[in-house]
Image (cartoon, rainbow over all chains, first blue to last red; front, top):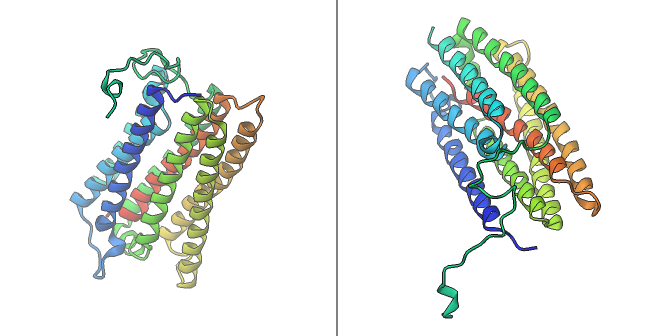
Length: 96
Length: 204
């Protein structure tokens, strides 16, 4: 069976997504309070950064790993709604 | 080197599932699996929001407890699950291309990484408990419940990956929809972990 050009392209997309997810994860190490030797203090910029990176990571997983990008509209809409409600609530509760 | 090697090639072999330019949509797996996955996402979403509510009441105490987590294991475990998801996503593509043996190997790779995640998580718990961080601390009670329920999903996912392998090994079966269903569940396990990692390990 020959591998079609479509499969090769999809395979590359999945690998690029994996690279981005890994890079974001490694960068979060420096943001996390656990790596500090001194006592951690609350930080709005770091929290906002963690939330933005979380949104990017979770949407990449949904859209490309779970293939929602090419799924019917109801699934694209409902997963986006979940992302918006979850991360929006997290940010609002944190800032209040 | 060869003359014809540089000639532009037209490729019309792409099937209906793997033509990226096709505007038609495709639901991976079936509606039942998505119903379950969306239900799980809503339930976990509620846990996450409740966690944030309790955290907002005692931010200093939560932050001090968060600082006791092993971020290095957290980062390594996140990469382990993301990589495991990459294996499963490639396995779906291999199944669609009819490369069953390759799909089986990729699924085994994904499962092996799932086991690595499980072992590292249990090691992390044992280490935290031995240092006295138990359910008596409010942050840690959330931590153990969230990561515990998640680890249960990892276990379920490993069983589902086993079902995927059984499907792929049967030459009469190897239905792409069955493999997609298993893959969807496994990616959900990855997705939930990414949120847990952000909220419990990184957020300040």
